[in-house]
Amino acid sequence: MKKIIILLISGLYTTMIIAQDKNLMAQNYYLQAEDAFNNQNYMSSIEFIKKASNTLGTTNSKILDLKIRSTYQAFKDRLLNKFETKDVIALKIDIDSFFIITQSQVYPKEKYINILNIKDEVEQWTIYDKVSGGTNEDSAIKIIENYIESIGGVASLKKIQTVEIKGTESIAGADLKLITKKLLPNLELTVLSLDNGKDKDLVIGKLLFNGSMGYFLFGEKKLPMEDDEIIQRTIFKGIVEELYYFESGISAELLNAEQIKGINAYKIKITSRGNVVKFRYYDCK
Image: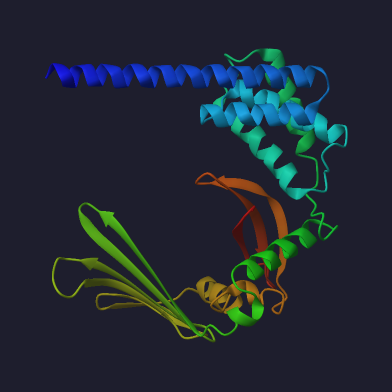
């Protein structure tokens, strides 16, 4: 028993020492970042502040404050290019994160207002894509093209005739299963079932679409698909719907970027003829 207690104390002590070392290292990086900022060496400041955040394994209001000010000044001094979409989006995400974790009642008023003023200016910056060199619509098209290329390219994707997507969610100790099958040109079957511990799952409901009409089945009840559902499936069709966006007169606009489960993602507004709107998200990488 004594050996176990000694090992636990030893392990706790070691953990505390490591944590202290990390805090000291992060503090040192922060001070170097602050010194670089004061000497108008903004790119070095950004690098040191990143090291401070990585060493801690997290961020905080103080770190984000300096990172935002350094990045903003780098843009103002043209050390960073406003036509570099990822850099602008990264700054906007840092600003959003600052206001999420920072309490205005506690944080120094002058510093808080400074970040607020930066936010107001940065929000006016139009997001461009340096590759397309054009508007938000050009950027959106380029992002979608890059996405198509990253998952195999147009030629390979158009060879796919069918796809099956499976998912399971545990609810109140029971497994709820969802299976969606899509078949070209525009057919869909979705089955929602419950694993009841028997050989055959209990089917709760089905969705069927034949390309022009569809319906839902719940037990013996058959409900026709609403018009807006049919329009969505008629316009946004195919196994990989992005392949058909620009053949169907669909427009795309890059709105901004958001963090989804810790991943920076472009938010793109997709508008079809008839003003049917949906939003798609693409990894910023």
